[in-house]
Image: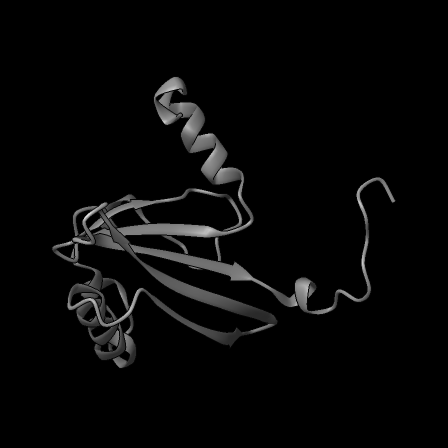
Amino acid sequence: MLENLPIDLIEKIIDSLPVEISFIDAEDTVRYYSKGDKRIFKRSPAVIGRKVQKCHPPKSVDKVVAILSDFKQNRRDVAEFWIHLGDLFVYIRYFAVRDKDGNYLGTLEVSQEISKIQTLKGEKRLLD
């Protein structure tokens, strides 16, 4: 239960994950981003409170708007894509966040550099 953890510990846990997380509320306003020191997409504290449309390159804004519209209209719950960014291969996923009644609360953006993951072969078991 999250209420058993101090907020600063929750932040440290999230920042330790091998992904970048951003949360955009139901009004398309950026409310949170994880602060890991190896972020692919650098964030400034100035993005908090800004509309997400102002945080993306102009050529991708229409796609972001379409995804958010689909989430709000309950046409989809996930959108995913992957891009090459220099030497990095980045997997980006958007997830609709909904309450128990299915009402749209916002969007969680999760980005991860997956080059190493793509090279995995066979299996490695715990303690191998």
